[in-house]
Image 1 (spheres, rainbow, N blue to C red):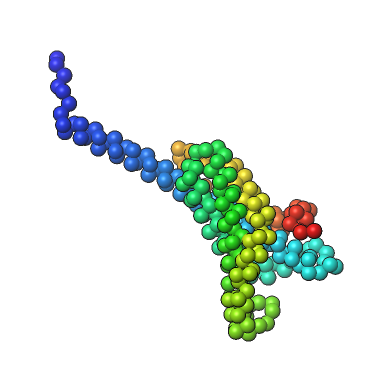
Image 2: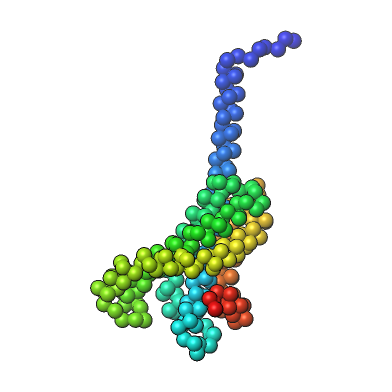
Length: 239
């Protein structure tokens, strides 16, 4: 039986089918890369909160030579956590999106290393920009422990922010670097089992796990053994 030669229509259909398969493949890769970046966000927030918490205690220690290490007032810490919460999330999301866009998601080290580098750059700058706004919000709403007028608070916010951001960014690189490393190490552990390279990858399930891991990390530093926090405190001190 003689086979019929392919017609122009069959050729066009095969090209359309090939293009559809390629489009689906690239769209799935984009979805997994976005999912990877989104799943990193809770860990970025957790590490930003830990850095901020430790920095506050270091600042208290530097201001009072008689200071004895202890847990600070949690309510006051909570009031000042808006900036690192938002800033840590934005910094990690931006770092994850850019890193996966450049290095992809399947590399064993490069995407995570690039995420650390970008998070180290973004975190101190973004949090440094948001902290003065956080303080201004507390002053205006009367939640600050220091009483100042709205005019004084506004003036401090406008004129003090540029210098504060510069100082905070320059002095916060070391903390941001270690925070980035801790984030990707924890993420690598999670991604090994339910990460974006797995066939049954779910953004919601993976993000739920990274959220739980980040929550545990914050709880250990803020409420866990004082020895762990003391080690972190000593690492962050300038002297």
